[in-house]
Length: 482
Image (cartoon, rainbow, N blue to C red; front, side, top):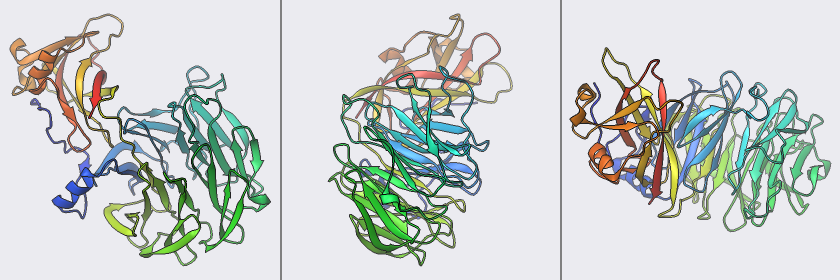
C-alpha cells in the first residue's frame, strides 16, 4: 500500500547520505549555487552521481567495465550524460528525464557500439545540440542530435587503439550556427588530431605524437577559442590552442596517464594531471603545483571542470582505497567516501543556474509498483536522480496516446492507494487532460508543489484502464524555476 506524499517529502530510495559530512556541512554545500556534479563508475559497474549537496545517487545504469562517463551542464541547471552501457552500446541520460540508448530514428534504429575499454565524450552547445564523440570499430565517430544538415554521423579519421576522444562546445552565440564543436583524438600513428569550425581536421602540436595509450582533452575558452592538453612521447604536459600556439610545459606525467583541462569564466584554463610520482597536480595557465597529500589510483586520471563563477573542481580516485576525492581552489580536498571502480576516471561538470522565474517542461515518470490485487499503483519522483534547479510545478499533463481510454487516479494528500476505489480519495486525470490549481492542491496539499535536488517532488497514482498495464507512464510537467 502506498500513501500519498505531500510536497517537500524526503526521498530515500537509491539516495545515500553525504559520506563524511556533518548535517551543517551538508547544508552549506547544498546552499552553494550552483555547484558541481560528479559521476563515476562504482565497483558494481553501476553509474553513480554525487550532487552539489554531497549526496550519492546510485542509478539503474550498468556501465561497460573500465569505462568512464562524460558530463555536460545545461542552461536550465540540469545536465546531460554519455556513457558506454554494459553491452557497449552508447547511452545518453538527462538528469531530469532519465536515460536511453542513443539512436537516430531518421537514420537508423541500430545502436552505436563503443570500442571496448574506451569512453565517449559529450558536448552540448547553447542551442541544445548534443555532440557525441567516441571510438567505434577503429575510427572516431561524431554524431549530433538532433541531426544537423541531414548528416547522421561522420568519421573524421582513425583513432589509436585503447584511446578515447574529447569534444567541447565552443563559447559562441546561438545565432552563429554551423559546426561549433571542437573535437580531438589520437590517430593510429600517434598524432594528435583536431577538427574545428572553418579549419576541418588537422594535426595539432606541430606533429609531436602523444604518449601511447593516452588521451587528449580539449576545453572551450572565450569567443570561440579553445585549448587542448595531452601527454607527449617525452612524458611532458603539452598544450595547443586555437591560435596555433604549442607549449611544452615543465610538468612530467605518469606514463599512460592523460591530463584534463577546463575553461574558466575569465578566459583562462585550469588543468589537472597525474605527475610522474603519482601525485595530483593542478595547473593554472601553465603555473602548476602539487595538491598536497593526494595521490591518484593507478590506471585512473583526474577530471576537471570550471563554472560560470570562475571557479573549478577536480575529481579523482585516491590511490589505495579508490575513494572519490574532489579538490577546489585553495587545494581544499574533500573525501566523498564513495568508491570508484579500478582503471576508471570520474567526470565532473559545473552546473549552471537557470534564470529565476524562467519556465520550462520536465518529465515525471510514474513507475508500476507491486500489488496483490485491485488497482495497480504507480509512483514517481522528480528529479529521478542527479541535480536540478529548484522550482515549482505549474501543471501536470497526462499525454494522449491512441484511444483516450485510461486515467491516472492521483491519491489525495492524507490518503493511500488502498482507497483508489473511493472517488473522494483521488483526483482522476484522463489521457490528454491537464491538472488545475485546485487539483494540484488536492493532490499535494498546495497548488504550487515544489521540487529541488535534496527535496524531490513525489507522486502516487493508481492506473485505471485496459490491459496490458504499462510498466511506466511519462507525464509532462510545466514548471517554473526559482
